[in-house]
Image (cartoon, rainbow, N blue to C red; front, side):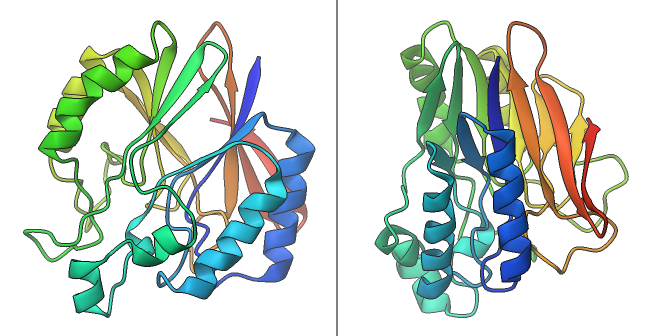
Amino acid sequence: MIRLAFLSDLHFGEGTLKAEEALLDDLLAADPSAVLVGGDLTRRARAREFAAAQRFLARLERPVLVVPGNHDIPRGDLWARFTSPRAAWAEAGLPVADGELVIGNWAILGLDTVRRIQRHLDWSAGGVSRAQLASLPARVAMVGERRRLVLCHHPLRHPAGLTGRQRPRRADTALEVLAQLGVEAVLSGHLHIAARIAGKPEQVLAPTALSPRTKGSHMGWLKLTLGDGPLGIEAHEATEEGWRVRTL
């Protein structure tokens, strides 16, 4: 069995040191083989926020696959948003291109779904480009016969009843392509809730790891168990009494 930690929406720049230390302690106690981070490392894409995120990831002392979120590009500075949206990300030493993590009989493919502008008012919504869709068959071929997951910030499927949030551009096309390529699940954040949404591929949502702005759900992370059978998922949720673990 392989244990992975999946966390998202750390939002460095708005959380507390106490919450950060509690998260680190619980992650290390679970002893994952690697860590997946589904974006929104920062609140406002500032250099000091990226530096804080880098320090936290370094303390995990494990392989990390990370993708950006919509908070990881400038919001108020439109010139920077359009001309150099990932400058601070790159300066922090974080990968810009879609990456992969291969571990045992599993491969996790990173997919950067952050977009600078949308055709609607929800600029936080992401998208999958035609170039990314065209590159997926070759990327899957490179990992061979391994079982496949995709890591991206924006969920390609939303929970039933969710209103006021746009899905990523070309989400349906991406789901069709990923299903054809045998991808079993898409791991995402963005909505700050822990959930599994059935489908091919399945959609797995991680809660916010550190943002105190979340209402109606707990901060936390997901422990993924990868073996020969179905994907196992436990939600670790921070409560006033300590960490609560429940199976998703």
